[in-house]
Image 1 (cartoon, rainbow, N blue to C red):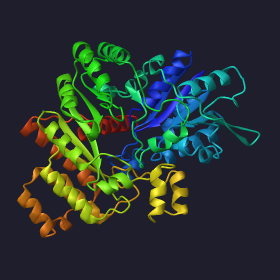
Image 2: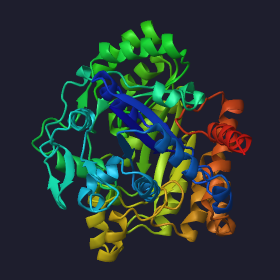
Image 3: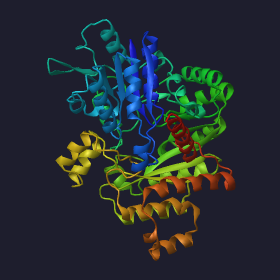
Image 4: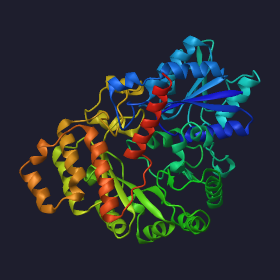
Length: 501
């Protein structure tokens, strides 16, 4: 059976896993990719977006490929795009279409209502999508496949989710070729997950909903064996000549015993520089020492807010400011690049709380900060919190469940404010200026004259901070998204688009 994955903007490890599962079962897969020029998380321009739009070419490629099933993985941010593409496909040809991903998993009842959606995959699709493809190929009923919602005689068949896959080693390695054959530079940083799930359930994150979805369906947090991960990386080194790695785990360091076992074989058999996600309450001297010995170049650590009350009551995160201070101090003793993320526009957050973050980072200096804005995702715990605080009404929730348009959290989210946008710039420059200058900027309210647009702090400040650290302190950032990487990506796809005219 021929399955076409339709996706936009970035490499998607979930699609790579699904493609591998389908190929293992004997099905044929391919990718139709929209680079989404000038409509990505980092660079947006409506006029240039129209010029470089390629929906017509994507449609022709799908139709000409004559697939049996089109699979669309979608977040809330790109849900509108996914619906538009699915509608165009259905108008041209009656091809079966399945939606999956975080947004459809959260609100399958909304997604399945669309005439252009035949199936919705709720939750993990490794087994469910294979069973669906098998059934369609053999012309067998699909109405009992767990995780799959379908339609029959205008009635929606809502199958429950199956038990979680506990033995992750039983899954095939991801099909990286499906994205690497599309864009060669995706392989510059090899992305890999060693686990599924998260130890926590932060209110703004999909995990706060997914944990409830999979209650009593097996352990939510699962991890691959050390040998399984090492084998994938060794094969990737041989096949793709990879030079750097990024571990996509929600928290890479949560299990110190696993990490120590992994580090021994990683140093011996892989030995490549890497980046990963950390959580301050798991950071200690031993963890940092292990990461440094393995060749870790950079870590990404979320702080989100300076207010411990907001962090616990609104974000449902349990780490303290002392945890964060200690983590910053430990990483600053090494050459590991420390990147910290914060969220603005939270319920009960005001300008003074944001200014306190700038003062905090002026005293406890990470290498780079990224300010993002709260975006509401359907069925997360944050929805109820925002409702209780008066930031959301029922009509707002309806819009959120329908996708709510393209407003990424790294740009404007749902809660962007110009006043906080100015403070965001103060937060971003806080690690690079003296305490005296910081006090003056706040006391004289000079920061009120700063620009508020997210483009400047998202791209130019990030670019400046990265190169300052690299040239002055010899500390190299290694994160999945970089300014230069995005510019190279856009340049290549702009050339492809213009060359075909």
